[in-house]
Image (cartoon, rainbow, N blue to C red):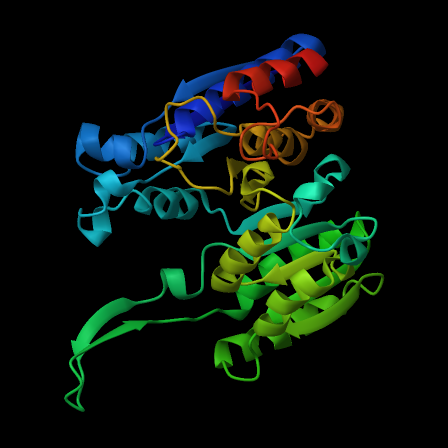
Amino acid sequence: MKYQIAVVKGDGIGPEIVTEAMAVLEKVGRKFGHEFAFQQVLAGGCSIDAHGVPLTEEAIQTCKAADSVLLGAVGGPKWDNVPSEKRPEKALLGLRAALGLFANLRPAQMHKALSAACPIKPEIIGDGFDILVCRELTGDVYFGAHGRRESDKGWGVVGYDDMNYSAFEVERIARRAFEMARVRSKKVTSVDKANVLETSRVWRETVTRVAADYPDVELGHMYVDNAAMQLVHNPGQFDVILTGNLFGDILSDEASMITGSIGMLPSASLNESGRGMYEPIHGSAPDIAGQGIANPIATILSCAMMLRYSFGLKAEADAIEAAVEKALDDGHRTRDLATPGEKAVSTHEMGEIIRGNL
């Protein structure tokens, strides 16, 4: 079987980590009899340098024509002074909107081999945790009206950002979360701020209504401030966390750090047909770019998510995840995972070890 993948290496460490992930996919292809055809696309700061904009129409059309999109990271201080509408991050928002990517899935799993890197006490972690953050991706305050005006009280400039959700948007992401929970531990925790925000009241009402169609899944509601506290107090209580764009952005980063390293966490952004964009949740890390020390595991695990969710290749996805797990169990660490005095492997060496395990 042949699959077309649009590849957005992006900025900073993006090219290094994506190169290793592509090589893993090629190894999987040889092992299981698939062909992965890659078409590289510029987006983010590199696109600004080449075309003057973070995302061209040609790049959008290439990504829309592909079976899936693999993305590294975009942005960096080099482009901090460009106008806000042309910042590298606009490429991500543009791709999400153009591809209809409304569901962002971010797993946060405690790898036993990395338990020492977890900042939470062992007695709290216990047997570990396996959380899936299901974040709505195309609504909320990021996509509302933005602007500035003069205060009518003489207080100077007022910035405003419109937070809103329709019942349709909430129902769509809620059903995805309940479907995911059905094949996991059958528990959804919906996170909002319904004690203050009307947007969250619509969110909670809609999620509660949808839950009636999934009587086999337990539903709980939690305010976002309490959820942030509970993630570090007792992360094992969570299975699927369902939440909006803003809260999901924050909580998924928190969940990633309690695993020990943000360099370990993949993500999937899916549309209604199951096609998607796959990327590590970390940024472009321009301070370490080009040094060969970035951790490629999150990007490699994002490829496993691609195989599982977009292509239906479960055995292939399992093989990648097992290869990563073995690399960690065997004691291999990139710099972000290594303890003081422990030898660290390079970006390429970690990729080679994982490919060898395959």
